[in-house]
Amino acid sequence: MAAFEGGGTLSEVYQSARKVLLRARDGIERLERLESSVSGGGGLDSPELSFAVKKDISQIRSLCADMDRLWRSVAAKSQRDLWKRKVEQVAEEADSLKDSLDKYSMRNQRRMLEAKERAELLGRANGESAHVLRIFDEEAQAMQSVRNSSRMLQESFATGTAILSKYAEQRERLKRAQRKALDVLNTVGLSNSVLRLIERRNRVDTWIKYVGMVLTVIILYFFWKWTR
Image (cartoon, rainbow, N blue to C red; front, side):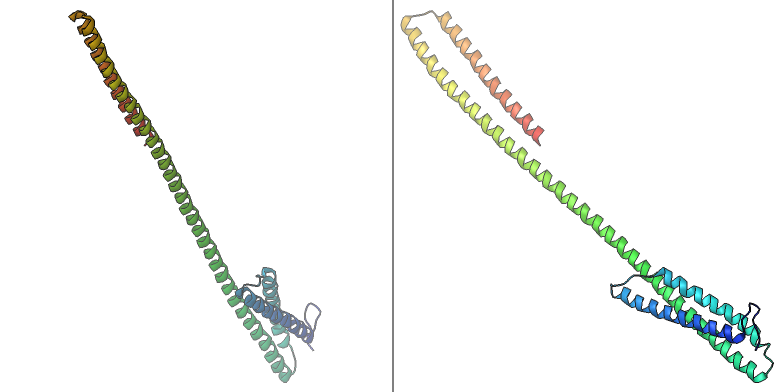
């Protein structure tokens, strides 16, 4: 039996290759079961296992290259043909495992990309929801401010109305007092100059009253504009 340069025979190298092949096949099956769990939402990816399977496949290919050199040194032709088929079978199985691992890696990358896109979409959706809530909050605050301003304006208008009513009452009382005073003065026979002085003072009081009313209206108007 031909011997390997590292000290092993062709049979020993073949047994080592078969052992690593079985381990790699078991690793592929575990990855596929894990992938099914991930698809169902109950599992996680295993980069360590993927790396271990890839390392085993590389080792199998290296062993196949060694066996390819060894079987060519076998003396009997029948034995050479037998070992050739065995080595080719191991190499084909290694290639098949390599294809399965590559397909798994592609599916895993696509799954990770889809998860990233979903996370980005969810993040954008959360950001837009927060923006909409912030807009609603600002609108609610603006409406509350408008209601407060409207209430203040109504209170100011009521106060102005009460003041004008008081001015009107005072005007009526002044007119009645003027008429009584004129009656008294006419009765006692005061001079016309004194009467004109009284009338002039009454006109001044009337102007003061109207000016006060106008100033009150102007102040209410500017207060209403400020609260807007």
